[in-house]
Image (tube, rainbow, N blue to C red; front, side, top):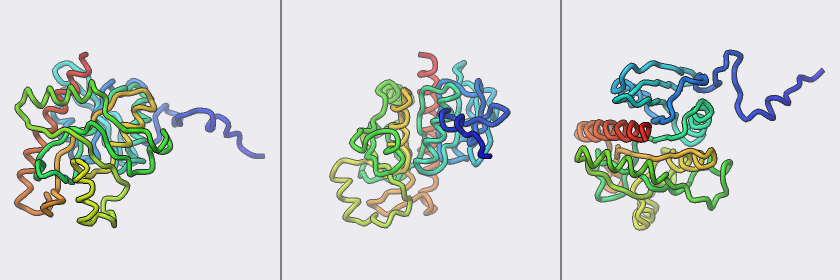
Length: 260
């Protein structure tokens, strides 16, 4: 006798017997309407530490989820893993629990001469060189940020006097991609692409498919043109300072969005 799996096939989301989601471990009511996502667990812990009354509401399969508040506005911060498949899972399960606005707070490899290590970029769109988005939209769908989220990020940065670059990034499926040659880097640079990273195009596409809002802010962890990276000692302080500034205005923007 075969097991009846029709429920698994017709229900969009799987839940465990306790009502939690299988990857993030969150349940209905655990998350706020605005969620900040980062691939770095350390960065998520830093953001959680900047919230009032943050409580961990999810901890499963490498995903950590915290919910708290900033100046009275409820916010959730969560890890999104590395790459687009992990990002899609995070967005799907958080959205199913009530999140409707997402901000990626991450790092990138800069291509622009205006973006040394520690510089910050707000992405208005992303080249989709990753495969996950194709499950949500046609290949020619343009992954773009929500105007309201981008406006909030830029306003929060301006209030703090934090300089940011604004433009397009390129999202790929490989951190150590074999085609990252000088010729390829120059080609994308000449097209005005600010940086390479791995998740923004997927976030924008999945959010659009779910009827949610999304934005992305990134701190340059390496400079592909100069061949410099945070992993080389003298750049660690520049990156740490840029990351801290990014976290502060991203959280402020998220709080503004939660209140509006």
